[in-house]
Image 1 (cartoon, rainbow, N blue to C red):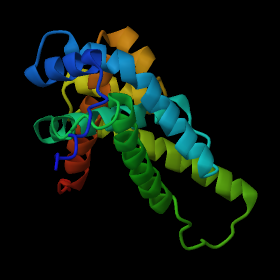
Image 2 (tube, helix red, strand yellow):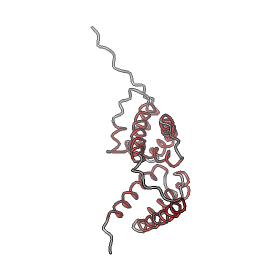
Image 3 (cartoon, rainbow, N blue to C red):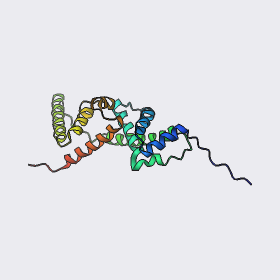
Length: 201
């Protein structure tokens, strides 16, 4: 009795070569990977958001693409190393991307949950309060930015204060597109630590 045939890999030679080059750290391989699959990741991010009745801004979509790329590289690229070749590389990456996007959207929904209603005030008082709060928030952000490195502070200003997309930031700073999301995450973590430090006075 003959043994059943081994499952046939559907991984193309091109995909295998790109994957091996990325895992080996070959120069330019990761840029090729990002250029090839970033569009797929952006499509999955937008589609997953639409399925939940959400409309993604370009910056939010870019954030999700960056999160997917970070997931691909996490733990010494464990997700890429686990790929067994039983599907196309694009299909495998789409599963990873969808999982990351769904998790991020769920986290964002929890953070945006309605809070306890506050007492109503006269419209003029509310508007004045909003303006004061916005000025105070911006002053606090500027204070925290002074605790960052020059490059980190510029990155945060461009993205969070000027609402620039990752593409615009890459053009203005020369940073590779795939490094902007992780750099912003590090800067935000540093700002969070600074905000939690005891204040003098």
